[in-house]
Length: 181
Image (cartoon, rainbow, N blue to C red; front, top):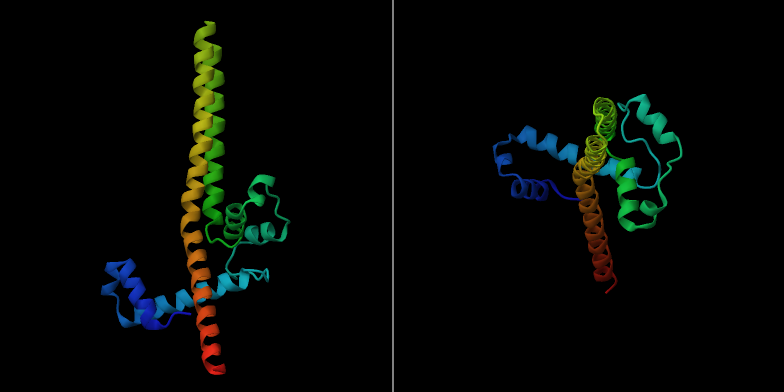
């Protein structure tokens, strides 16, 4: 685990505007950092709920078995993505993105259907249909890209914590070697 000074130094390196923080704000940021590390550590395998303030909808979702596609569960990146999404604080945002995407897909389908009824020419109808299919596909791709953008901070935090845990483990192993010698 990082000491307060290491935390402050790394935070200043990442965000130069953090130099303006007061001592109280630094202490609050450090305690929040430690709390988030503890939440991620405890949710790593114990199934512990990370927050009492979570909505009941989130709790009911997490109690149900998670069904994933076979392709995403086979890869290491897919397993990481699933783990991060289970412990993420952005589940509500992801749900909102899905809702907006599906509503837009529905509107595009309705719009395409209405336009097809107004065009009597076969080529015009086909061009409207192709345009509608391309819009639906682009909305699905955009939804996936937004999900990736939502996951980036959580994945980077998870990797940083794992890297720090490995570094802490190596330090403990090195200290135990020095003691035995």
